[in-house]
Structure formats: structure tokens, C-alpha cells
Length: 122
Image (cartoon, rainbow, N blue to C red; front, side, top):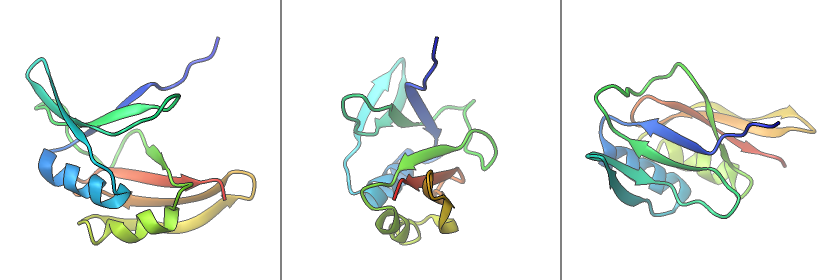
């Protein structure tokens, strides 16, 4: 039996600010969704990919500690990373080689204080 992730939620204290940040970095549009009185913005996802959202709730706080989310940077890790500070975030670790087989990685902090990473195979 194998287990894989199927959904992620990134906590936000200011959903609009967070939405603007991620839309600016990835040059995409997020869709608003309301479920059980909860408001969220959904990341676009394709067939066979993991979906996720920006989410705001009283018991769900942004943090630099905890699970690390790696965004697929194959289409332009350097380009995405260059947009981080302009969009209000902070680059924590510039693009660096993990191993030749695994690829490259870079870390950033979003406008809410969450730490995430970008990964590329090349």
C-alpha cells in the first residue's frame, strides 16, 4: 500500500494579501471558495497534481515551524524566486543544488510568515 498527499492548506491571517502574494509569484489566478462558512482561495491544479488552498481560520495560524511545502519550480524556479521580495515575501535560501539527481531548491517566507520551498529537477 502506498500513501500520497492529496491536498494542502496554507494558513493566512490576511487572505487577500496572501492571495496577491502567491498570484504575483506564480502569475496565476486563484479562485475563491466558501465551505461551511470558511473562506479560502484555491490554487489552480491539473490532472494528477495535488490541489491546495490559502485558508483562514481562528485555530489555524501561519508559522515558520512545521510541515514544509515544496512548490514545483521546474517551469522557472529562478523567475519565481525573483518575484518573492517584490511581492512582499523574503528569500531565505537562494537556489542551490541538493544533489545532481534530486535537483535544486530555494526557500522563502510568504507575507503571512509561512516558510515554503521551490524545487526544480534541473
